[in-house]
Length: 382
Image 1 (cartoon, rainbow, N blue to C red):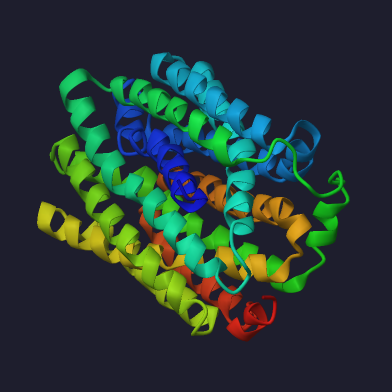
Image 2 (cartoon, rainbow, N blue to C red):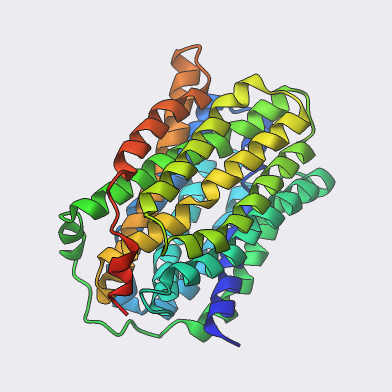
């Protein structure tokens, strides 16, 4: 079986193990008696831990070998999902979510580096497009499965389903991941060296701001839907439609990235995300919520392939794991910052958390402008 298909299947398992939980988690915590502000802090614990660990992904993978790091991280991810489903007290919930974040922080950068190494620089956009097409199918199937399982078997069931799906990835990744990275041992010095590249820093800042909006959307949209008296199944449908559109955007985004300036694609994606998040407080019916989910999925679908591919064009192959660690760390700092600031808005003002999309979107657009190399630079690397 071609490595691209195996990597896509592993990416699907990676994503769906969390996507089955994602739409249910805020409602589950609310039913345990936690406020919106407390839920924002709890969800942020996962993202901040993941972001911190991802910065060390290069040294970790170099020290223990990429294959061992990936297999161990999948196993730890499943175990912590089980603990998160069983937890009831605030410290237990926070520790379990932080454990999930740590496991995924070890897991995702070397997985993305493996995908990047499976193609030439000029074809990397298409490879990432194919990978995220299959991996993002989880954003369609996961919410549907999570909402159905939660409605039928209770709030904790999606956590246990996620653990089982995480375990499915282990034999797949064992087949394609190298036992040890072929480059010399990664030094901690690589991280500050990478931060000295201005274009890379701007791309990471753009990523952080985009995923800050994503953190607001995924944390507070389920609560908004529940407050309208709608079923948790509606949450699953909105996230599923969003996931479908997101998935369908991956292949065209992978092709367009080598033909257009990446900042143009990023600006379109940022506008779609910010617009959808900003209108949430104004909509209360399932059809309107589904429409917002489709617009959000369109915008969000342009972001990962565009930004990740451009980052790989800036970095030497032997430093891909470190670069992907920075990229994914920016994602999770954003997913930490969005819910945290959203919770602060709810606690200390009358503004809805969704209003954060305006400053986040403007700042992301400024960072995206001119921050990426043209596609010709990638073609020259073949």
